[in-house]
Figure (cartoon, rainbow, N blue to C red):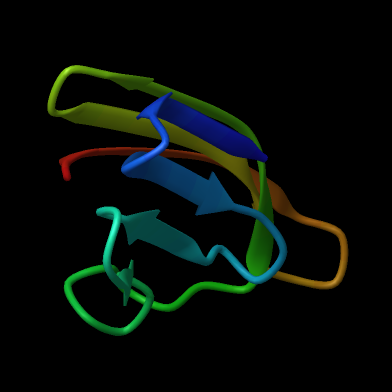
Length: 74
């Protein structure tokens, strides 16, 4: 998923639970850098002002799936 407030304020999310932010100059990857690693995928993403929300799922067992909601500030 790709969402943004402008060309210099873009957030992406997707496979492996990765979330990254582009501030117009460089990308900041939050997976493993403030965002705990998990085994899943993010399917939805929203950004408004300084708030970011991503939703998806994580496989925790052979057939167990948990819903994941990540809320943070960019």
